[in-house]
Image (cartoon, rainbow, N blue to C red; front, side, top):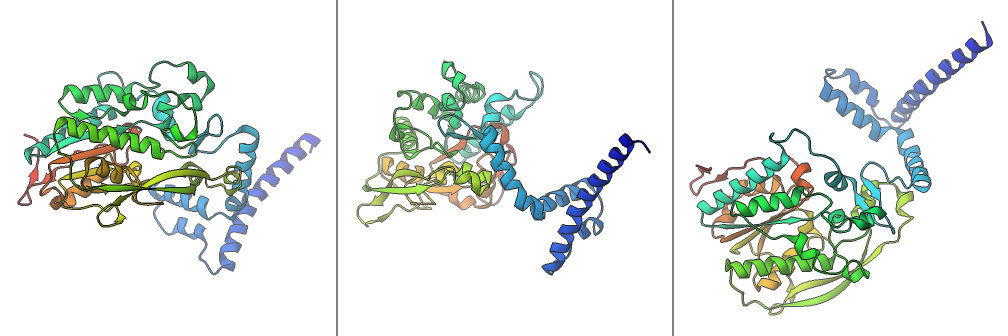
Length: 390
């Protein structure tokens, strides 16, 4: 046997040993913990594509080597290449961006021109929902929230600072199409572009470490929505007085949590976020929803942040209630504003019994990547029958 062949055999055997040693070590660890080896699950079910995919994901989560070595490898990639993994992108000046939101802005839409796609599904679902609500005598106001990179592309890449037009026109095209179809929309792209670029943290519309808007961006959006409602005379100014209580919290952004690497998280300091809680002046308590309100708000985590988590009653819903002078009802589903909130509403039709207005908020990336897409969801009728378009 030649020297070259000996080296090839040695490398091949070493490779086989490494592969089997990982599996053997994993089995021994699971047995020592009194667990059934996960590898046994591979032979306990049919080898379908779905079952194999589930098995693969379970193995990735349970693998001892993966748990111990992957965070350090990801940390090394971050230090050397500024690579933040599968869910995040490192921008400029310490800003982080949600990768899926950036893909919405930068990737071409699939399909050919004129074919059915997500944009058409989004438009059809919104118009259908508007028409179903109209049959009940309820108005619909749509509020698409821009991705962070749509407002601050210069924080994503240096060359983006020279861009004078929207990074991605898809959302603006849908807004224009909806307006032509008679759907009322609050265009936050216009609202957020009316002020000067970033000067200091208090004037930023979004949080550097987070996918969501800042308290300033949230309050600006709430004022714009309230102004639209009052201008359309879909609701009158209420009589309830709300006070504001300044509260400062420290928080790590949700993008850092998505990365799931403690070593990377320690490279960032928690952000000080200056919020304002909304307090009922007469009762001295934090703002609370009122299910019998004539206004229902549907949306995703942009409604939840500051409202349902720390510091509470300081988010979009509470501040919109303050601007209108009346309490609201709401259904919030993180990441599920495209379809899941309407499914929840269809299971709780009593929430529409006395409503005059539904406000539907969703982040623009959901136009393409919304959970469960943009399904047509029939609303139950008053007697349990579905309300569908003619």
